[in-house]
Amino acid sequence: MKPITDQIRNEMVRRFRFEGQFIGTAPYGEGHINDTFAVGFRREGRTRRYILQRINTNVFRDPASLMENVAGVTEFLRRKIKATGGDPERETLNLVPAKDGASFARDADGGCWRAYRFIEGTLTLQQPRNADDFYESARALGKFQLLLADYPAGTLHETIPRFHDTPNRMRQFRRALQDDILRRADGAREEIGFALEREAYAGLLTGLLKQKKLPLRVTHNDTKLNNILLDKATGKGLCLIDLDTVMPGLSLYDFGDSIRFGASTAAEDEPDLSKVHFDPGLFEAFTKGYLETAGSVLTQEEIDLLPDGAKTMTLECGIRFLTDYLSGDVYFKTERERQNLDRCRTQFRLIAEMEEQWDDMKRIVGRYR
Ligand code: ADP
Ligand code: GN1
Ligand code: MG
Image (cartoon, rainbow, N blue to C red):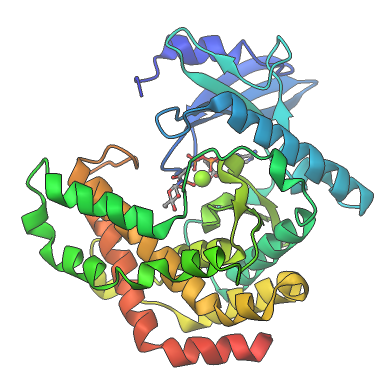
């Protein structure tokens, strides 16, 4: 993606139906994919913020289809939240259309931009501060899946083909390893071995899906904690954001992706592995919140496989970070050279500890089923 010049960004600020007098704009958030800005306006003595985002079109090849998904899902959620007495301004994303009425706008460099109303009074956490935070995020995820249970899945475009096809991620990893374009493989032998030893396991969930032993649902597919806003005042789980990958998928992908990011004692890219542990207390808090909200619609198999959802998604994400490291950091944003390798290593550390605590994880799920 081309660097964003001040000129382009200012031009894009003028292209959307923002209300009031422009105050300023600044980079915002810690997403790995899109370029996100907070934009401030002043109106009737009050400040109003918006989120302005350039969509990463290297990752999302068909932004028009992606925006159709986002518009469809947010509109659907809006209606449901309203009907059940909730606050659609805060419990779902709300798109701000471009001045020509479209859901996104193109800049002079071909970049695609969209805007949302900023959901104020919320927390985006990079790690849960305590078990309650994580429990609340799980409840928000469970509610999200319930609300979308009757969404017309056939109308959703696949924004990234085979996004959670873990065996395919494994094949991509093998190709990157074979090419080893930067000669980085030698410095990552342990991680490479760890991934390859789990190659057969990587196909567990996709295999069960193929055999129709797990149901396809409308899922979010990117449920790490910084994509789930909490209400600052009440601490309650409020809103799932980052809807670019809402697609048909397995409930276990969403459960697992939350666990791999949030049930850790350290940041996703912590270089010091002695700080990284899988936290069974956090796993328990999330499982409880998730099953309290979504449990009634899940099948017995889905519930039994929650630990495998966690392990599979942690493995998949670790493999993706390792693949990107070997490929020269072309997919995930990085600020330092070994960051993708550090990210991979935290994921693999979590897996090793999950494997050690497997029976406990099963017991925890058994407590809330
Ligand atoms: P990415 O795909 O790069 O992860 P996100 O859509 O997740 O981009 O946005 C990045 C960050 O911006 C989020 O983690 C969150 O902190 C913040 N954010 C995004 N949309 C909103 C919103 N409508 N209101 C408040 N904060 C938001
Ligand atoms: C990316 O966009 P963001 O930062 O919320 C990625 C996820 C990964 C995650 C790892 C579209 O999420 O799949 O799990 O980084 N999103 C995409 O932190 O690839
Ligand atoms: Mg995000």
